[in-house]
Amino acid sequence: MKVEIDSAALADAVSWTTRVIDARPANPILAGIQLEAIDGTLQLSAFNYETSARHHIEAGIDESGTALVLGKLLADITKSLPAEKTYLSTDGSTLTISSGKSTFTMQLMPEAEYPDLPIVPAKIGQVDAPTFVQAVSQASVAVSREENRPVLTGVRIQFEGDKVVMTATDRFRLSRSSFSWTPQDPAIDTTTLVRGSLLRDVARSLDEHQNVRLDFDTENPALLGFENAGRVSTSQIIDGEFPAVDRLFADEYPIQAVIDKQALIGAIKRVALVAERNAPIRMVFEGQELTLSAGAMDEAQATETLDIDMDGDDITVAFNPSYLIEGLSAITEPYVRMKMTTPVKPVEFNGQQEADSDESMDYRYLLVPMRFNS
Image (tube, rainbow, N blue to C red; front, side, top):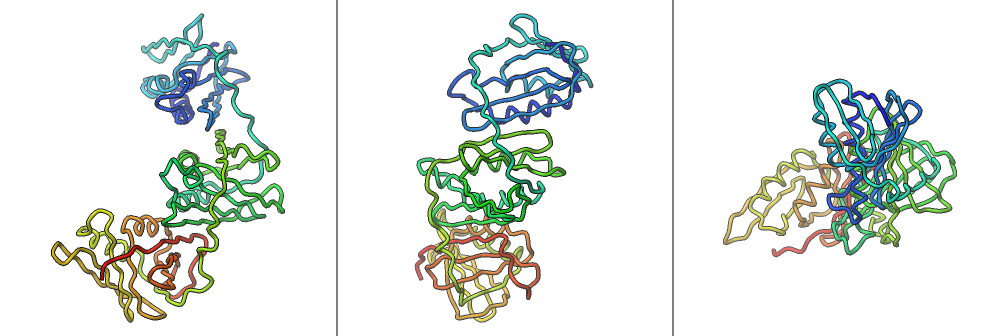
């Protein structure tokens, strides 16, 4: 293999591809990144049995060929290269990397031991990248960190015609985002479950100037694929039954309050300063005012009052302040509508553009209140 390539493009491609390589791979061969020089491109790929990443960039190919080398080391080398051009060449059991006056030599890994990458499923639709990124960010708020409950570490993705719905729950809260997309089949109706951390990783690495293409085989639902700007990722599907969460949303909410979102987040952060770890902050809705409080009688205490627009009876609820802030921060609109039934049943949070407009149902955050001492 003999290749001439732009240094910055190489560094970017290697960095993106090697992000799926585990710090301590279960099999040492999975620490490798596979390089293939063919037809005017350098193709890069990495795999960890759960996720795969493939990228290709233009290159001057003097001699076609393949190489498998340590991925993280190659990433460190390529991001430090000084010149505009880099030259890659294999000779026997080594790969030589030259740029300017710098030269590195890496040992080749045995390609025969490297597993075959999974086949990317067929395209099922596409969406603009900013919409996809926002939906993933919102839905993944409630992804659980309990590795012993794999289904709760996932985001359920429902493809229903021209609508996609992403849902996650950790049993204490639920986050749901919805968006419109362009499906290959307008009658599509299928559901899959993918690990939330992998979904977030894909979203973080997207080129937001290009669409995201989603790949999925409804007949053999083993992988979900993502394509964007020449980059292709696949993720294994989580095998398991996602909880029946739709029943948690109330048909009617007799108590509703509209609040300035940033004012509310600021007040929560200030009041929570005196709350002990895992202690709730209380929210007293009375008339057209919301009073937030935290702390115990014999310790530090804090209260703050906000003006609100409220309909319904007075009510007092208490929440984990971190869960409150995370859910509110995912709302993109300047106002939040809190919708309540009783002090112990889940409260729904929605964003809205104006103080007197309808709420948006594109993002729905459901949070279970905590018990508190009066």
